[in-house]
Image 1: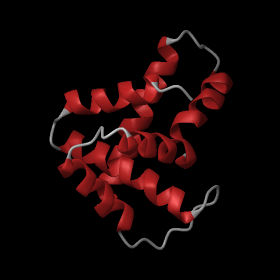
Image 2: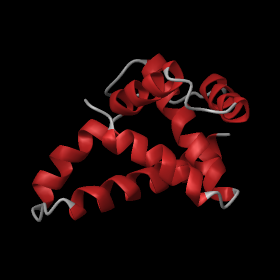
Image 3: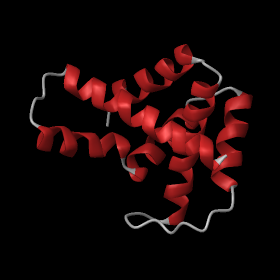
Length: 119
């Protein structure tokens, strides 16, 4: 599961970077500061919670999220609590799983939801 989160993290961040660049931001420092809202564990966990509350995910997707979230990991996050970190890992694992399954359409639905969420 953590391998899927590793893959999903890079896919997720690429989508966010592509989106931010498309808004016309040209300065790397500004891109970095704007991306934090999306790519930080706290941001990811907040989006995940909202999406779960809005019944956005299928049962299969929820199972992947829960499995990754509950996976034993000895990593201690630096900038957030362990629960927030594990929720972010669940979202990243789902993105990684969908990418591995070549389900780009569903990844785009998830990323569009996140990008268009009011935060």
